[in-house]
Image 1 (cartoon, helix red, strand yellow):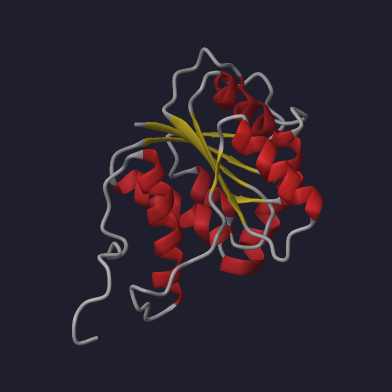
Image 2: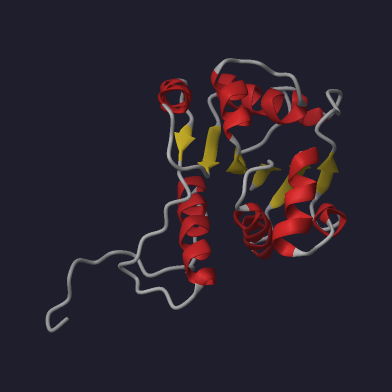
Length: 189
């Protein structure tokens, strides 16, 4: 499977980093873009250098590289994930404002009718952001808010992150065991 993964500057870069790890474990090709602001957030939230992530990807692109192959719909990929997706990036995608490689790759993903998954990480949401989510959804994108469940009885933050990442993998059609699926209430619980 070939996936474009963009990490933008919203809080919650752990979602993108964990997704990168999980996709690579499953031998997926990952074409990675990290926004300039995300590089700062990665250092702040995870205490790692973004270059260590770039070196793990199948291919890494800077967000201003509009000549990258993934800036064209003719480059074959199975889907694209923006995790986390900042509201700025959401607005760009929703309104076709392809000012950088992330927005352009998302536009290509939509126009080619491929899977586009936005892991929006913000709360509360303004009417404008909700409208932008609706526009992306109507265009064929999947809005997957970073909203973990608790039915699987998470033990720590990693379990919460894995739930959201597992949902992304499920949307891509990638098998995983990151959380126990809901099977209804069990007797004697």
